[in-house]
Length: 118
Image (cartoon, rainbow, N blue to C red; front, side, top):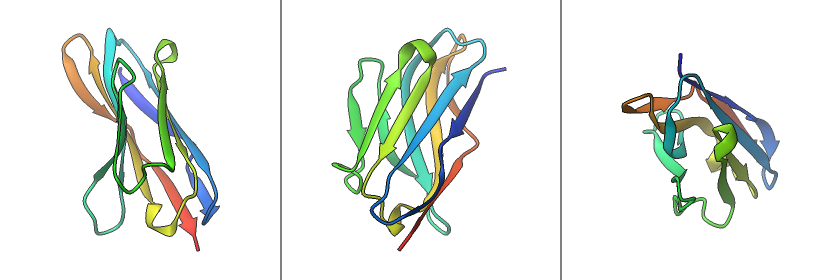
């Protein structure tokens, strides 16, 4: 069974940092792109950052310069380092991966809560 498991969320004060981790497991042939999305109450899910198999990255304007996405291909893991967190960053953060299992499919993690207090 293929799954994505996230960890690292929690409660932090404004200006603080958190690091999210997401590991893919199961019968995976290869992983193309991985990324992080977030959804705040009453809002649509939005892209935070993505990274492809060549480590090319893409960030939402709202997190550029504060968040850094990286991946460990050997461990099927993607990380999101979040610095200078603000209350507007509070949301459930979801990991996404486009994987060949053996056909290419999108998978989502269960989500991890990030809460930033002012």
